Image (cartoon, rainbow, N blue to C red):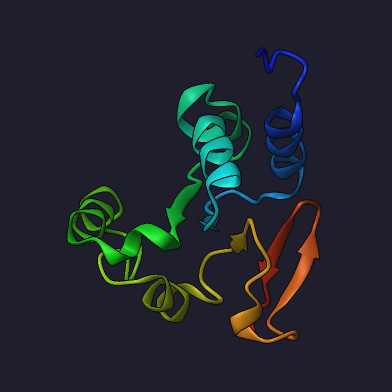
Length: 124
């Protein structure tokens, strides 16, 4: 089976790159957007080149001590990076743009607004 004609991940990266802002934090949850986003930042580097200082974090991985430690070491300038996504949101809301690859329904309908294939956390 070949996936050579499957452009979903590529299309996602291109669309996300258009709406992201420099210094953004991007919260992922599910595997497909996580791996597509990681590739765009670290693999091909096209997101990182287009929008400097993008920080992807995976909400699902925060259950592991090693991931929390790694995030704290990689991103010491991001408040709460070594704790949880909730701590990141609390410490960076209104300071850095925060986007989600999946709609964070747990935050409530008024907390985010659609931004291309992403959702952006409102500052208020």
